Length: 121
Image (cartoon, rainbow, N blue to C red):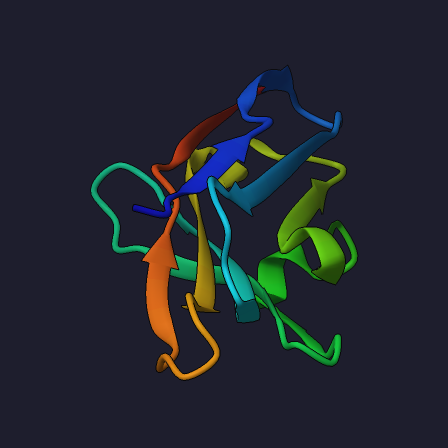
């Protein structure tokens, strides 16, 4: 069964950077919309950034200018470059991909296991 594997989280100081990555664990036919969400303790999961198959991006207002989402389509990998991190960015970050496993499959939702990002003041 295909899973999304995330990497890159950790504990960092305010003002520094982290880069998250997410890729399928096995073969897929194609990936469509890719995104990063986050969930802080006691809060609902929220969209951080999204990128379409043609590269169009959207961002949560509070991360604009600091975070950059990108994708390598031939690797079906999505990245989140996070610069100028702030303590309020602390959360578990989840990647999302809309995936077809075969050419005649429908697009299904796949989620990563989550990676902790902690930003100290």
